[in-house]
Amino acid sequence: MIFNRDNSGSKELRELTGNYYANNDFDKITTDIELATEEVSGLIGEELYKKVEDWYKEKKKDADQDLIKKVQRPIAILATLRMYQKNDLSHEDDGRKFKMATDNSEKLPWEWQLDRDDARHMEDYYKAVDALIRYLNTSKMQEWIYLQVVR
Image 1 (cartoon, rainbow, N blue to C red):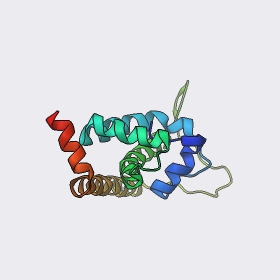
Image 2: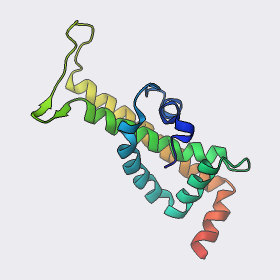
Image 3: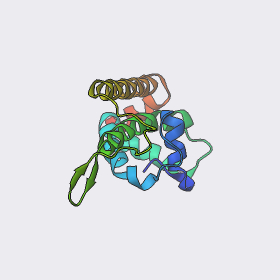
């Protein structure tokens, strides 16, 4: 996994998305990260993803830190969106529940607000994927990718 180095996964997600609470329990989002990782690695190729993941894990000084962030960002955005969508309802033994604050400090969003928020997150995801692909097309990684394909 390309997150949670030094047990700071929630902080990393906060820095990458700008909206994930750094005090959230990271374990609750790991499945969403794994699924989002499959999607992104399918776009850029498994070998390239593994290379970037190795750089991340090894903390190599010569690693392309920009590329690591550009791979992390779409994964983080997609994973957090999916987690937010799942958390709109709780899933308990006796069915799905919608919980409300009893002190009236929060109001429930309208469906159109949720739809607009989902669309905004997906727009951010697509922009992050586009930025990643542009980076791969213009960086020194292009030669590395070519060599992996020719091999």
